[in-house]
Image (cartoon, rainbow, N blue to C red; front, top):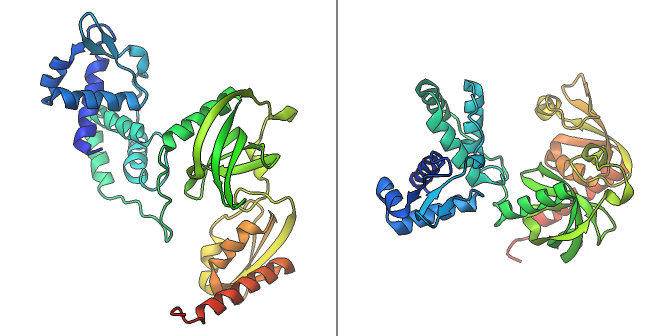
Length: 334
């Protein structure tokens, strides 16, 4: 949606909210007020409905209004709070798969309109000097219907009801149908995931939202099958990122001086221990659950890292490196 139309929809919301849910405006009055055709006005009203706000229509007066309970009371924001919210919406919304992104944009524009002039000018000036740049890997494309999938899973988790999903599973190498007990929604590595008990795998699994092709809430309740309340931190435990494999490893890596400082200044894992060496390199120790996720992180450092332990991981990295050399030495025209 273009910013001019977003601004008009915000003004329409503001106008309807001032009715208190009683007076109302006819379609003709609203069309003249905003200088648009009736067709455009009805399209704007549909936009409002799509973000979950339902205007009331009075058949007797043939007018539209918004009940006051559709809105939160005014909130006083300080300078940093206002700038932080606007920064997230205006600069980061294209970098993360944010559910209700359109609603967040409308909310930000409403807040902007209500800010004191001095604060608004400061925010505009600050935002003009801030950019959000994706890393070397582009962000995942936004999932069609992400809002609906996210909202359904969130509602199912709150109501403790099972969900039937059609899922493109990379792990299984095929599309699967699964009855899922959704425990928790998680944003990680530029994507949204749902963690829950899978009927197919008979275990708690992690599902990426942009691979869910269809989801329907069932009437079946879930209660974590008699287990204690699901704890995400306990489930992830010492996994490198988010998928535990059920076996603990002591991983020791030595990073060359060229990247040593960059590695040492970041807290990659809660078990991390760093030792600086006389030659400028660093030795880093981790205790991780599973080697799958950390393997690909290590490969990202190429020849600037050496696996000291465990032997199993050293062998895996060496095997992948040899395969990369074979591929690189093959004539691409063959």
